[in-house]
Length: 106
Image (tube, rainbow, N blue to C red; front, side, top):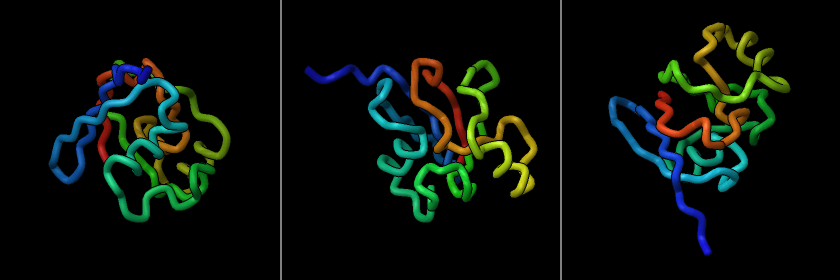
């Protein structure tokens, strides 16, 4: 029995609005979902280690609570001069019910 894809993620990429559907634990991280569905070139070069900043996204939704900064994420963002709390590494964001209807920008 397959799980219902009940998490809708809205992605803005180059002026285009794209809707992606998934469920909790279908992918290890938001980076993997974005890579798999959108075929992004040079995206996530460090394979989810939180070191390269190539999977950077901007969270446009103010009401969504994504998991806190963990591991290398904050240091990597600061090293690349990203200081806005809406800037996140998609490799460090776990896909769960908190992401329902979240809007992100690539």
